[in-house]
Image 1 (cartoon, rainbow, N blue to C red):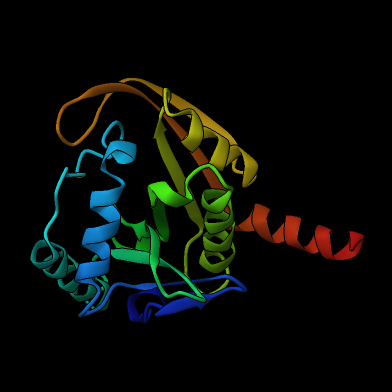
Image 2 (cartoon, helix red, strand yellow; image 1 turned 135 degrees about the vertical axis):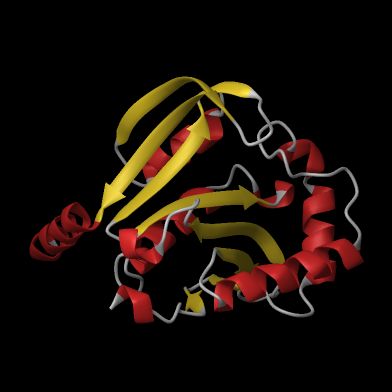
Length: 199
């Protein structure tokens, strides 16, 4: 039952470990966010030009607490070999309850790893994970219409564009056109079965 769902703690792929942030992740998080500020600031309103290890450590501990309380599911994306943080992601409820079985995937990629297909690989992995070990029936991806990289990630991962919200507002009040891509468990299952037949 969704009400009793215990969130999976991590996903391990050939090259990545995608897991809940934990105590001690602050310094790596601070380095990644600070190094990526110029890359992130146009579309990630939370980005800061300098983020201290102490600030990031508090954030990582808050992320962990919310994860365990099933309030929000923020994830770090780590290189499996070096264990360094190469990005962040998450399954976000955005004010909904777990009973809705809805999540929105958010993501950012470390500037040093951007433009190499990492975002698409992470999104595909999250979709597979989300429809297998999580209860999600619908997963959304939202982005600024002007964010070409984000649009390409969704399209390459096979998420159909469902709608364009004109003159939408971000949490800070900035106006933009928002594109909403979505994947559904029933369609994903059908595509997975078809892929198995064609393999």
